[in-house]
Image 1 (cartoon, rainbow, N blue to C red):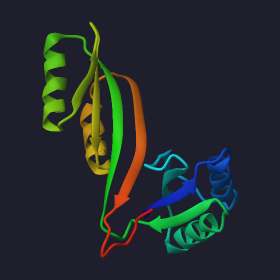
Image 2 (image 1 turned 180 degrees about the horizontal axis):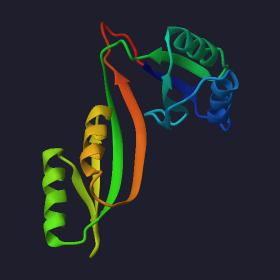
Image 3 (image 1 turned 90 degrees about the vertical axis):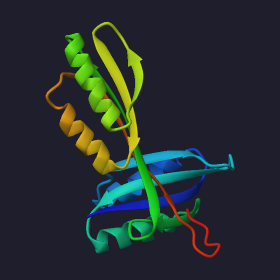
Image 4 (image 1 turned 135 degrees about the vertical axis):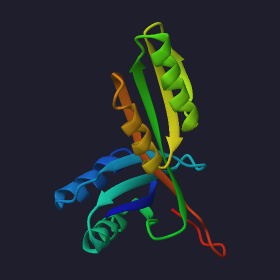
Length: 165
């Protein structure tokens, strides 16, 4: 099972390296990792997707929360949350008909055109991971020139004034 863990951390040099080292040093894998600033420039929010069972989840959340510069760690997997992933994919277009097929597929998934050249089209799609995977499956017959996936980011829904990480 994949667990989505968010952490609110102080925005200090080396924080990312400490968390990655802590998790990987204990033999756990991080499938995706995203870090970005929050509305407070002194804080960053990290989203880690960690595969494993309940034991792995407990160990990762416990170890990360022990770090001094970590303010809060939350497992949002079992809670109400919204998660998204961004993909940028450049696809070769060898004919007008092929370009039309790709654009039709993009329309079905609400993907946006990020760039167009004479021999390729670049699409961007922000969606949940299942939609991204379905989109990529349907793009397999085409020649993918380049691909970037952001990994997941998540926001937990708050209840009764609870504050998410």
